Each structure stands twice: as structure tokens, then as C-alpha cells.
Image (cartoon, rainbow, N blue to C red; front, top):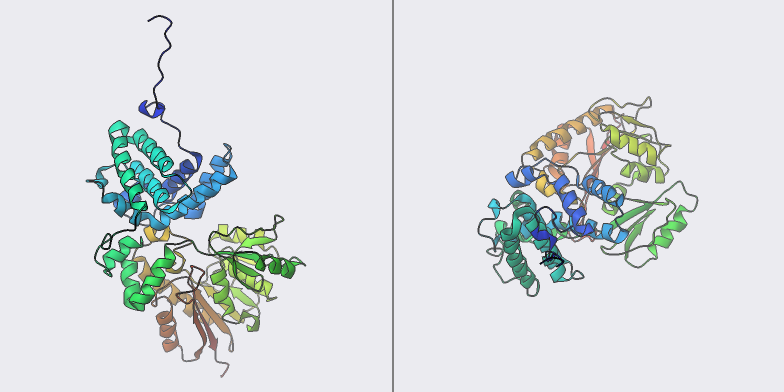
Length: 454
């Protein structure tokens, strides 16, 4: 009829050329997940692909912030991104209970439903209807109306699950490794390793810790004349779990008021505890931090007033260390070579490359990238690093060995094997993070001394 207005479609998602825009936080989370866990790696369950989690998130956030992303949406995107990485296979198992052929769906559709399922099960402040609606829109944009209808039915069932505790046996027979792997979203090989090495009780504690947000750790920049006062002020804030030196730890979900003038940097409090357990204030100098990374442990040594030199094989990490700690001599060098500095080190710190199984709460992408066969290669590398460092130490020198993993082959047995082969080596201190520690991260540390006898 002439003059009659054209009726607009109820939802632009029904028009494949104009899909409904995703809410900003969800769009960022999906973008970061795609960068961190590429579709081909996720689909084939291959490991070792994709960007580092924090790097993937940072890039997605920068791109969105250039387009006006709010601070509130950035915080929500961060929470969703890390939450999905921590709970990934648990969420996929739950979705699979309501899907006939989940492997036949487009990867992007599965990821969108996984993110929506995370919201439904873990974010009480987000209305269930909102999570279902955007999840359906995202799936419909990928697979059309039929797939959108499937997503609607599945996500409504997930929403119903959120209202009631999971029935006994939902994830499988109680106590079975496969059940624990599903329940706690952890690869079966890690579950079996922890059960064998630590027993059911401790393994359960470790599994519970790795699926939750870790404590937030900070350190006050030691160069500031008021550093001690700033640290004391932080320690007095609500949510502070502990303070040690210039380091503080806050409970997950806390919102500490941090100085905005660059006085505070992020730093693992569990890592600080591990290093300080070896009494570094008493180490002979100079100290060579041979696997310094971005300088987390280097900073603590400088805080203690130690004469420290730093190196790492990765140029980008040394560049970051030089920016953060411009007064510390720092060079790109391998810890398998001679010390790159003129002065012979009296102490060598090996914050060794490891499987990272103690940091799964903070770096959950490790679960989906690390392979069981990687561990043997790392164990061999660690042994070579220990031997090389030992050769560079003078009599009476000290060797500090740290890892951020939960695997005796890389920790206690690695050090025991070294001691068995070096009769002039003695173990002065051995320390591990307690399984019930509130930090959500777990470290191993050992201090070895070379006999000064001729």
C-alpha cells in the first residue's frame, strides 16, 4: 500500500548481513579468547598455540578502549576472560550434557555459549535473561536461526542448573580422576600427577585453588623515600590478607585504593614468600639473577639492598626490566652460558623455567597449552641450568633454585638428584607453599651452598 511504512524486523540478528552487536565486555572477552586459544588449537585439543593470556587480553582491551570501552566493561571483560579460561572444560562438559553433537558446532558458537554459561553459573550480578539473550544472538550470527534456537534451549537449561546444586554424580563417580578433571576443569594428566604425588586430600585442595581467582599481589616501588609508609597504608586497607616487606596481598574480589603515581606494581605475593623463605638478605654478593624475566625477584633483592645483576634469554623481558629497574645492570644472556658480567657472582638465583602448575589460577591458559611431554624437556633443562650455575660459583657460594610448579620431578627430586651428583653441595633450606595457603599460587624454593673446603 503506497505510503505505508516498511515494518522493521524485530531483531537485526535475523538479518545475516546485520547481526546484533555484542555487548562490549562480551565482545572483548571473545576476542581475547580467540587470540589466546585459536580455534584450530581448541578444536584439535592441541597445545602450545595462541598468545599468552595477559597479552591476548591486553591487546583486545587496547583495541576496544580506542573505540570507547568503559572502565566498567573492561573490568567485566577481564573477569569473564579469566573465569572462562579457569573453568573451560567444566563449562564445555556442562554444555555437552545438553548437546547431541557439540563437536559438530562452529567453534565460535561453542565459545559464545561457553562464555554465556560462565555468566549464568558464576556471575550473580548479571541477569540470567541478559546472558541468554546475548549468547543466543552471538550464536545466531554464526549459524543462523536454527543454531540460535538450539543455543536458546541449551542456555535456558544451564540457567536452570544455576538455581540448584549439581546432583551427586553429575560429573561422574566421586573421586575418580576423570570426574575431578571435569569438575575442576583441569587436564587429566595434571589431576593424575597430583593424586599420585600428593594424595587425594592435598590434590583436592590444589584443584580447588586453581579454579578460583588468586590473591592480588602488589609491591611498593622501593626507590621511593616513603615506600614503607605506602606499604603500611596498603596493609591497613580492607581485604588485605598479609604484608611482608614492601609486598601486600589482597583477597580475590577486593578493591584496594592504590596510589595513582606509579608507587605500586603488580607482584606475586606467593613468589615473594618463596624467595624470602631463603633469607636472601644473608646471601653473599654480588647476586646474579640468571633467569630474571621481567624482574620480579630482582626487585625484591634490590629492595633488600643487595648488589644484583640480572639477565634473561628473552630480549623483551630484559627491555621491560630495564624500564622498571633502570639502576640494575641487565643483559640479554642465557643462564646456560657464563655469567655475562665482569664481577664473579657469589650467589646465583635460578628462578627456573618450569611447567607452571603452581600458577594455574593466575595463568589458566597453561592448562590448555602445556603438554605432559613438555615436562621431561623442562626437567632436563632445569638440571642443565643447575649444573652450569654450580660451575660458576666460587667456594662458599650460594645457589638459590625456585620454581612456580607443583611437580616433585621439577622440585624436590630435581634438587635431590643434583645433591647426589655434587658432594660439595649442601642443602640449607627447602620450602614449599602450603596447599591451604590463601594466595592461590604455589612455589618451591631451595638454597644450596658450595663447600669452601679445598
